[in-house]
Each structure stands twice: as C-alpha cells, then as structure tokens.
Image (cartoon, rainbow, N blue to C red; front, side, top):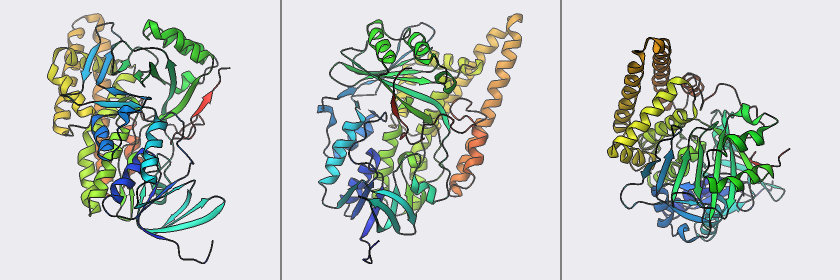
Length: 477
C-alpha cells in the first residue's frame, strides 16, 4: 500500500456481471462517478444466465445494446411446456408483441463490458479482487498489488458468495437444491421455433432454448444424489434422452458420453435484505432462485435501475420488495411444483396443467407474472388459491373410491402441512426484511419445511460454489 490517498467515487460496484454492469451504466448516466471492480479478466465462459424476459431486453436496448442481432442469440416468444401426462404441449406466449431473448452468457457480459469501458463516468477495473469492505473503503488486489478506493456507497453485485453481503454479517453459506447440467447442441432445431421448452417427467425438469445458428442449449436439473452415482452419464442419457425430441437425441447422448457438458450448483435464497444506505445488495447478492424460470437477470436489472433512480435507500428497498415479491414467489413455487415427485406436489402440478389448458386468462397471467411484467401479489395469490382448490377437489373426487381413501387422506394432510409452513416461512422472511436481514436463517429453516426440494436443509456437499465459480467442464468417466 502506498501513502497516497485512495481515489474517491460516488459509487463503487463490486462485480461486473450483467447486473453490476447495468448498475454502473445507470449510475454513470445519472451523473455519478463510478468504480466498477471485477475479479475476473474478460467475460467468463461458464454456465450462467442466458434467458432475458422482455423487461430485461428493453433495459439493454435503453443502454444501446441490441443483442438480438448477435449470432449467438435468438428471440424468445415465451415458453412451451410438455407435461409428463403425455397430453398436448401447453403454449405460454409472452403477452402482446413482447419478446424476450436468449443469448450466450459470455456474449451478454462482453457486450456490457465494452459499454462500461466506453462510458466516461465509469472506471472499469477488471482483475480487481475485493478482499475487504470497511465503512467507505474497499481494499482489493490487482496485478499483484494491494489497492483501495473509497466511495459514498458500495453496491454488492458480486453474486451468491458476495463479499459485500458477507461484510454486512449476512449468510452466504451455499445451500444446493440440485445441479444443473448444461449441454450445447449444434445443428439441431427445437419443435416450436423461438420458444423455451420445458420438459417434465425426468429426474428433474429439462429446459431447452435456441441460441441462434441452429444451436440449442439443454439444461438438465439433476438431484444431487443422482449425480453422485458412478453411472450418472448413462442414467441421464436414458432417462432424460427419452424425453427429448427424437431429432435431438443422438447429439444429446453423444455430448453426454463424450463429456461435453458443464455443471453448476442450483440454490434458492429469498430476498430478505438489501443491505443499508452505505452498502446495498442487488441481483443474486440480494437473493437468488432456481434458473428454471429465468427471472434472475430481469430482477437484477430492475434492482440496478431502481437504485440509480432513487435518492433514498429505504424507498428503494420498499419498492424492490413490492416489485419482486410476486416474481420471487412464482419462481420458487414453479420449481417446487415441477421438480417434486411427492404426491401432494404431483396433484398441484396436475391442477396447474388443467388451469393452463382450460383458461387462456390463466396462461396470460402466468407469463405476465413470470416475465416480471405483472408484480401483483394479489393476482398471484388468487391464481395460487384457485390452483390449490383445484388440487383439493381432484383429491376429494378420487377419495370416493375406498381403495384410494388412505392415499387421499395422506395427500391432503401433506398438502395442508406444507402450505402452513410456507405461509409461516414467508411471514418470517418479511419480518426479517423489516429488521434489515435479522432472522434470515430462521426464515430459511422454516421455509425448508415447506420447500422440500428447492430449500433442502443440508449445506452443499457437492464441491460446487454457490456463485457458479465452481462450474466446470466434466469428462465422463
């Protein structure tokens, strides 16, 4: 360390991923002097967010980035769900003329890095690994030297293992619910052009989406215990390959057997704290969800814009609680319902299918909530309530058969118990938000009694870090 006074900024942002970069651009264009610190040099080529809902696409375009013209991207019209019951696929298009986007993560990051490097109000510091956050000073290492900066506000956009989050005394311990196995298939096409495809009926849900140039990303949600098996590749090739469209199966099986895949840890941590006025959390540092619903970048961009536009931290935090509550609940609920094989989850999932198949208004409401275009917890609660009623009525109808009565009784009991813990857990989470994050772990433990798949109680035993830095390519054994 030299004796020189460290440079002073209005805002120092830790993490130059998509959310941190958008946060820097939003602050700089509002007149702030910004330091943007990123531990990695260059855009990381790892398995991370690639699906942007329409609000996120609009945000990038507002900053002059039109990734729709990139060769590694494809427009997103919505989602199509292939239920395990063998019925017709269910179309969930984005409402109106809204379009999302799928684009390789490295392309998104490199495009944003180019934009921040050319922005006059931003000092972009790749290779700066933050070691300590104390009051207004950030200490980091860069090019082998220890350096520091000071800022009126520090923003943690540094992911699930955020050093800024840790400096606030908040938990960053990894809680892995499953693993995501990612495969890029070349020279193939999906059955429905421009849509994300969700396939049900495997060990976990399968998500597929186009990436331009006849390329398709396949994401397998795999329970940890399945991936621990020595025959995991052959198990995935048979159990997941059977669900894929026939035209994709040969490439899929070949990629698995040749080890051409990457693995990342999936975890869920509800948004309980945004920090305090001098140290703010955005994106995955504030909270994260299973990537099945693709809400991560969209919510993170919303955090970045709201923070840059607000002069009052408490107003910012209240606004983000209101704006993220419904998408958060939906993201957690959708994964739980589609990944859990217990009877009470199956009847809920079947009720969701019935609602989507019979009610266009329900399909439209689902995609609006999923895309963060609608943030009404009232409408989400109404839709969830109807789904629960449908599920209960289906179980009651089956209970008329004396042979099914024991199953019906146990299924209803399990459903009621899990709904009770869910309600209690989110009450504790919202109380913890009001307390600035205090009670975070208690809320998580209670929610884990309802969300048996997405919030397992055990800590990560897989060797993968929660921020995705443990993502790596595996060769099949």
